[in-house]
Image 1 (tube, helix red, strand yellow):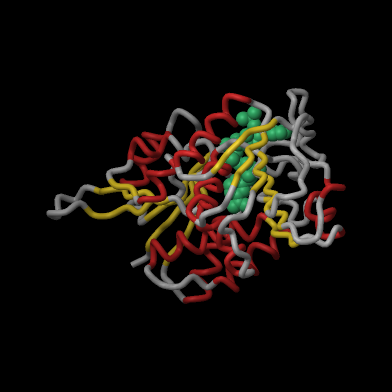
Image 2 (image 1 turned 60 degrees about the vertical axis):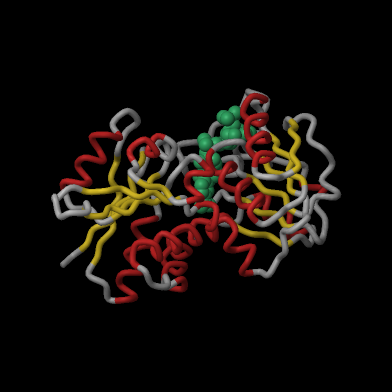
Length: 296
Ligand code: NAP
């Protein structure tokens, strides 16, 4: 029987998830399909009800629902509870055969973020991190660095309340943490990891953005950091995935740093979601070809 999966969010038309998952189904000859389903802010409850009625087997959750979805989950895994947000949901039949559905949430952003670092064999334990951004993705990233025993994490953002909250969260997970603004960022020397978790550098229209910032942040089409300070030995990770080669990654490559493009995080989280839903290894190569082919 055909099983159906979805990604819900708004905007959703640009989502690459249907291409990635459908490529995996084709590669493995699975009788399954994956669609994008627009669920606007404020309509999550109705959206979930219709997903249940249509017999959806599982779904991904993206902006703006990753935190609000938590209220609708019957069960959560450890990572999802720690981060306070979910991006992957399994729809299970209710025990006892009553015909109802039970939702279990996971957060695959954290493992998706760590996956390309692990694939490169780069150690995290004891290393210092400069993390730009204090939104949902930054929270999953901080949790990932904490899980791997990083040293200090400096959270850089334009909203002191949000950076302060993320730094407290990081400390609660055992990381040494401090905060800075874009205007008073510390020197990069000494940080092993420099991570951009803001939309700065994203192609115009990539995420509904593309405007310049007049609010103490970086210009969206500029660089989030003074790239002249990037050195060999650093790992520069830009989670923006469109374009694949952001301005930050280009400068970091020239400086001899190890660079990690955001599409690898996107693939990592999709592969993990695939494994949760289907209980088998994800066909990473086929998923990557679908993604890179689309964005090139
Ligand atoms: P979010 O929750 O909206 O957080 C965005 C963060 O970036 C906030 O801290 C925000 O600051 C900051 N920011 C926005 N515009 C800025 C600017 N011009 N200058 C400086 N800071 C700015 O979004 P998110 O879910 O964390 O996602 C952040 C980015 O990562 C997006 O581009 C998204 O597409 C990308 N992403 C990639 C992956 C992947 O798999 N590769 C996964 C998740 C997200 P304020 O709070 O002050 O607005």
